[in-house]
Image 1 (cartoon, rainbow, N blue to C red):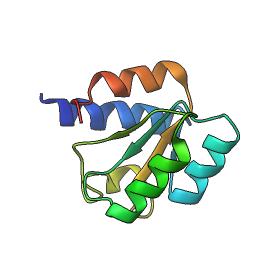
Image 2: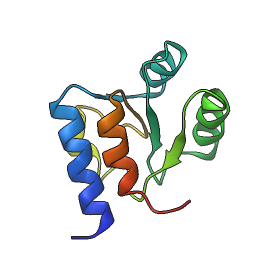
Image 3: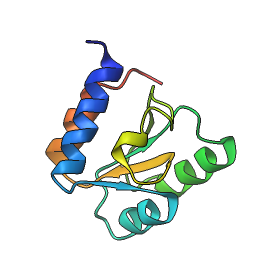
Length: 102
């Protein structure tokens, strides 16, 4: 298994545990409320979305790019999303372990 497959599996665990949020507004609310431990961006997130979420997360929570596209992530969410937040520290560490350096 490669890191992308392992990351997708880790995100599935997050979702099943109730520790995965998706969508720009929900993620921003979680970051502002101090509930997000890690913010993740799909590899095909628009430049505007990526720059806005990175600026919003600055000094609050780590924001990383994933090697997965929104199409690859559709099994995790009822609607396509490019922005995700992990709300559990241990699950965030699990996901971060499978991210390549951006």
